[in-house]
Image (cartoon, rainbow, N blue to C red; front, side, top):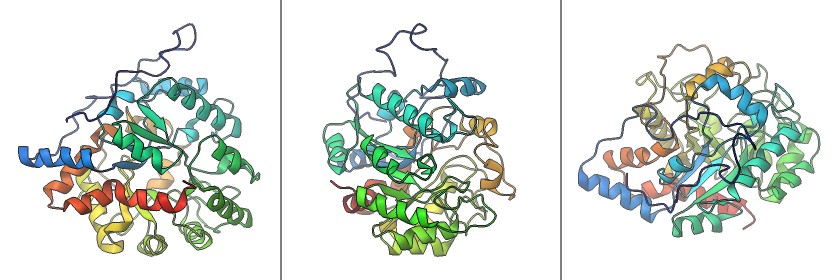
Amino acid sequence: MENHKQYTGYQSYQYLDAPGDYKRFRLAKEVGRVASSQIALTPAEEARVQSLLAENIAISMHDHPVVVPEEINEIFEQKRLGRDFTGFQGLALSGLDGIFDNLMNGLCTITSQAGWKWNDVTHDLGMRLCDLAHQDFILVCDGVRDIVAAHETRRLALVPTLESATPIENELDRLDVLYGFGVRSMGVAYSEANALGSGLREGRDAGLTDFGRQAVRRMNKLGILIDAAHCGDQTTLDIIEESELPIVISHAGARALWDTPRLKPDHVLEAMAAKGGILGIEAAPHTTLTEQHPHHSIESCMEHFEYAVRLIGIEHVGFGPDTMFGDHVGLHRAYAAQLSVDKILGNKAFDPVEYVDGLENPADFPNIVRWLVRQGYTDADIAKVIGGNVVRVLTQVWVR
């Protein structure tokens, strides 16, 4: 792929000395770790792909653009030390102008094996922002203007994001603190229930609590984009009803195509779209499968995309691949209990893969554009789904 980005080779924490200042891990390759396929196009079609990425804003609604250790079991020690490494090289090849970086707070286990603790989350956030402050390729995104600026200057705007509001516990003002620390998007619950509402692993979804309703209203006032990707169905419907502004389901798919709790039923997707929100199509291993494509690949993901377009309209669909740099399947195996993988994926049999071919990590994002070009989508519709729809919602939700 042609590299449109102004990246000069910075690597995380290069301003420090290892091993004196921190422990160095042998990290996974950001490019070429596995033989993830590129969608085959004619030279003219590939030129169109590059033109679309150069001329339009491209945004990932959900990713974890960190690099995990090559030996995946070393991740336990890496997380305990609280120092994640951003995949700058891979991101420079992604074609993206904006990325919602969901940190790794469910795995942030500096003081607790359970994750999601306030001190650990703020440590994680501060450490990443410190690293980003020492380079000039990634802009920490404060508003839509930063995404536009990143596109115009061939850089990347990173949106600090939390997948769950669990760390605020019962302290509403912690939402203000997180906004002050740069968080611009937040989930309500991550699989397990918390003080705000129910996650999707709960056998009984009681919906938003009274405190959860207060939190939704506060996030509206602050300008924090609300994400219901890991919430239970009733909790998601309650969020949509309570919020005065559009919400997103940043990384999921259609349960009608693959019946597991991790994906959303039609009536929830329709309610979200009716409020002006967006569904981001997921690509984490073994999530957006289908009966037609049980071997998870970009084709499985795009079947969910086309179903969603037919159901709720192309103005309400985008992409939240939920990828990372390294062995994502191995990470799921290592943290199966903590991430509730068995509950999230359900009991439906699937064809296991070692990686999602075509959407293995954030650098594969251009394959989405290639697939859309190959399928004959118009430039206008491609511009909507790769970023235009997200910009529309952010303009409504963010303060500026």
